[in-house]
Length: 79
Image (tube, rainbow, N blue to C red; front, side, top):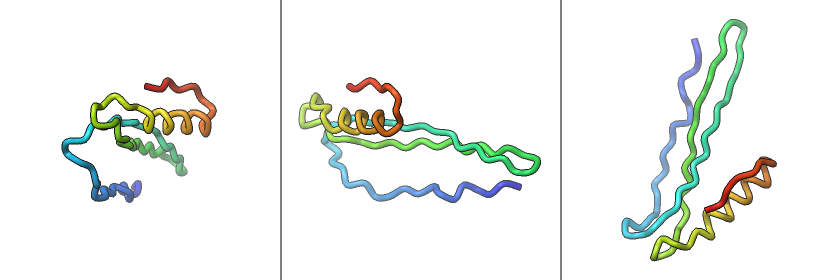
């Protein structure tokens, strides 16, 4: 029997309801094989970045996307 999901954590967010945000969504799959069974754990991480008062400043999201592309050595499109 596989272990239950141990990391379903939601922290309190400090965001303005009137703010404009970009979201960078990271989806990944972690596979683990035991003696007779493969366990697949699918996860999604959403990072919300301020897009300025007009919602047109994508600098924060683009910096995050560029850093992720550099770290993972893949090509990612910015906003």
